[in-house]
Amino acid sequence: MIPPFFMLTNKKILIGVSGSIAAYKIAVLVRLLVKEGAIVKVIMTPASTAFVTPLTLSTLSKNEVLHSLATDSSWANHVLLGRWADVMLIAPLSCNTLAKMAHGLCDNLLTAVYLSATCKVLVAPAMDEDMWHHATTKENIEKIKSFGNLVLPVHHGELASGLRGEGRMAEPEEMITYLQNYFQQHTTLAGKQIVITAGPTYEPIDPVRFIGNHSSGKMGIALAEECKNRGATVLLIHGPIKQQIPVGMHSISVQTAQQMYDACMKVFENTDIFIMAAAVADYAVAEISETKIKKKEDELILTLHKTPDILKQLGAIKKKEQLLVGFALETDHEKENAIKKLKLKNADYMILNSMRDKGAGFGYDSNKITIFDKAENCFEFALKSKKEVAADIVNTITQKGHV
Ligand code: C5P
View 1 (cartoon, rainbow, N blue to C red):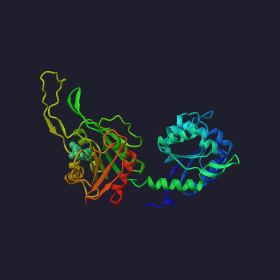
View 2: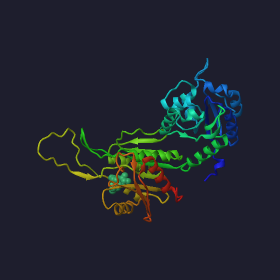
View 3: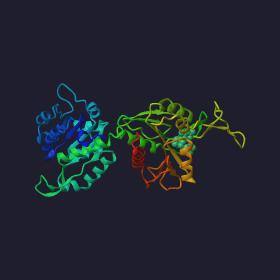
């Protein structure tokens, strides 16, 4: 693992400065980042230029500092700036810019870049204590956290008003440590190719009907996002789902088990980690009617045939260095069934969900899992959000250092 003090070398860091007296500290932050080998660009809100000059920050960052959406002759490409950065750090984050972020307002370059940023956004709030404790501020902070932004803690101490209290911006040295830790955590899977399947498959009966299941794809998407956030190249192969595919990953949309099988087989050879989180249909209709089946007899008999077992097939051809992970959704004899599947399909890990656990499985935003490895070690986890469960899974399957 790369030691944290090298973590910022060549990292592209976009600093957004908003209007607060703490803006003067950004000069030190930019200087430290450049010393650490980071490539730094700075954008400013118009109000912030009264606290620290663009000239100071452009000299220190060695890059032009932009503070308006357009000049007389040119337009600042906010979309490209947001895509350029590995991380955007908004520091200081004023109450006003926080409120704009929480509500999607976009009346200056900084907020436009924030809205188009595809990278992680970190913020370092800075405000007087009464503003920090205001109900709107609290609500806005929670709101921007729920959008996936990371909020650095504020400190207690002397404030611009002369009062003492909470609301001081994190010190530049602290922000550097935070960024180093962030990059260390988010590069553990750099260079890895990871494929994750998600959602149900639909097996057609006729042009209007199908056999499907209640899988939402949420668990697979949470896993894909977790792997992407740790620096992996992620391909999501998904059945019919309503969930939005997160930005920054490749995806292939399929309908049937056979199509999912074909898509998986095509990419498996070049995959380091393969996670089968999809709820693949075990049976498909043998003969799909070309026309809508009419209501006639009291009984309609459909002949089903077995679909290819993708996980089992991948287990049969997998190389030693490839990691294969399956899911077992069980209603009874959970542990025995999960271990049986792990062995039968030659997977390295099997993630068990039990339909008997409240709040776990299809459609929920939470899940409760137990992970089994080949040696039948068993790692049990509490009921958590699918995002946290995804982190537990990725931590467990990568802990032996075999990827
Ligand atoms: O045997 P069972 O369907 O319970 O196994 C579940 C695991 O196998 C899951 O990882 C699922 O994605 C995978 N599977 C598969 N192909 C199928 C059925 C299930 O890869 N046809």
